Amino acid sequence: MNAALTVPDASPITLTVNGTAHTTAACTLAQWLDDQGLAGDALATAVNGAFVPRAQRAQRPLAEGDAIVTFQPIEGG
Amino acid sequence: MTEHQKDPVVVGFAQVKEEPAKRAGDTEQSALPPGRTDASGWHIGGRTLQSRFLLGTAGYPSPAVLQQAIAASGTQVVTVGLRRQLAAGAPASADGDFFGIIKSTGAHLLPNTAGCRTAREAITLAQMARELFDTTWIKLEVVGDEHTLQPDPFELVEAARQLVKDGFEVFPYCTDDLVSCQRLLDVGCKILMPWGAPIGSGQGLVNPGALRILRARLPDVPLIVDAGIGSPADAVQAMELGLDGVLLNTAVAKALNPVRMARAFGLGIQAGRLAFEAGVMAQQDMAVASTPVAGYPILL
Image 1 (cartoon, rainbow over the protein chains, first blue to last red):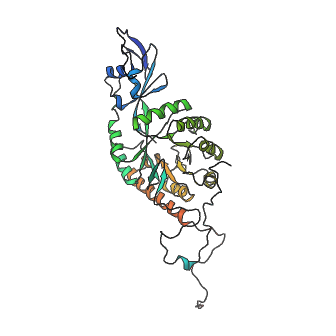
Image 2 (image 1 turned 135 degrees about the horizontal axis):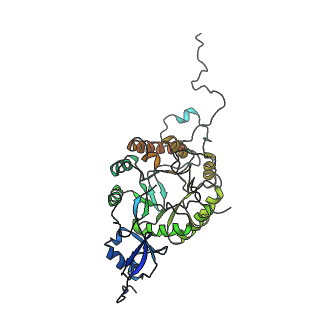
Image 3 (image 1 turned 180 degrees about the vertical axis):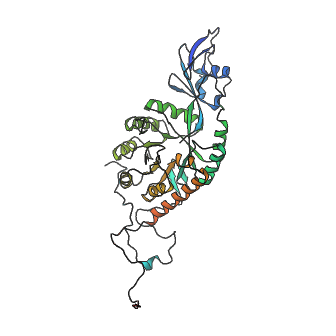
């Protein structure tokens, strides 16, 4: 099932995003990325320490207290 | 004895003593000594490469210098990393020009899991890297000590076990300890990247004897010295020991002229490999006259 989750009348929740508290009305990870204007294919995501692949972001619900981290390419040794 | 433990190969000094006449007319294409293979191509991670130089991309004075250094090195594999974004909503394109430059080189990407302290962290980061860089290659780093950045062999093996099962081609950054290297092979690693010295230290090969043992005991496993290399002489030494490749970053990035140093390393690694294939002469305790004197008239 690949249909995006839809939650009517979602009330704002507080997340931790890359270590900083953040309030959002987004109910899925994909929706949160959209709301932030982030290019989904330019970063990688994890929620509560677990990797969330691009294809599963629309099915990954967000809940109060979730911790999102986003990673981007950098130079490395 | 496990599958990867075959009869040791002898590395270092040549075991075949040729007569001078046999060398007349020799070329570098001539027959190789026992235990040596040709350098024209090597196979790693499902690919055939010509260069045995793997280059890191961090710490260069500018993106332009990085790009020139990659070109000068002749490398076909560059390492890259992942960074957690600093704040919510931070633009993902902050280093966009870096990634564009790297991709434009055409080099294969080898993402790392730098900064990870546990197998779980490293596995998550590897999964992210696979998606972001579109490669199954992963340089697996799991650090066990803050001061030396020494790999944690236990977490490393556990992470490698799971990543191999998940389809990754794992390049484990490991110590030169034979038994922990064997454990990495046991869980499915096909490549090993033992350290020469602590990351960024430039100390060279602090324990060449251990590397020699690894080469002897694991003759069919690609071995890449990773970390601690300071000068091209260190890279030559590693290649003369029969290791298959060299991965370094700081020695080029922090050179006064990184582009020239990249070329110096590229040439050194080629020279060291050729020397290994050719078989370095055996050392002697006393002088051995190189000019034949038998039959010459005594002039004085």
